Image (tube, rainbow, N blue to C red; front, side, top):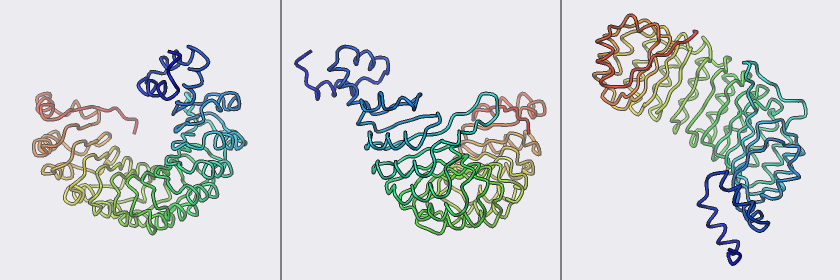
Length: 364
């Protein structure tokens, strides 16, 4: 085994996916320990304060993840030590008690993000979920510096406002963008987002829980000519059928999330069924104005595979059965648990013959 050079050992390691097996490999001898470090492509950091002790062993990392508080100094060290990073996942941890844990004041902010953007020219995916110290300056900087960025997750970064969306709108390579819970965003921000080069590249947009958005802002999203997935969940009562019908004009859509938009009704659903011919999944949880007329509109749809109707009650089992029998592509439908007693067992069995019938219990 001593005759094996680093290249051969590296080729062997490429076939070893199990972390425990790689650990055993590294414990054989000092030489193998060194080789395993040089060929490690991904790492999760549990103790950022110990980075100087172990990170230099992994100079060729492509992916790094940490859910803990991490400072600008530590981010700068990562950028200097691992310049080949393409995926940086700094999504902050969730608490188990249902309350949001807020990062400390010294958590990474815009200056730290700039260090990554300058030190890691291949950065393609950046996840900053719940990093509350990241503000407009940091977002603008990362978008301007990271020219290869395809994914940007800013969910829960609640200090980001319309100013940052102007810079994001001018990005040339971004394909996935999450702004969930960035409640400072307004219709003006969506207009800025849709007016730049981003409108020609973005495929997935999440603006759930942005409750300052109205139909006026949603209308601007029609400029997104490549958008395949859109999430508007919990955006509030100001998004109505006016916005919903506008969304239906986006024929590139494949996945649409509209949960708890209480002013969305049959008008939107019928427009979606008639115009969004590529639509494969629709979540209408909590859209209580939807009736059997809206549901039956999907009876002749040629692409729909998943339909979620949890917390919707203004229809009958006959409506569901007619839609299922007509929509031959449908493979999964979800209904509210409270509907189970109103739909005869024989009808439930008939529905289940054509697609998976699932029941969901909601608190809404």
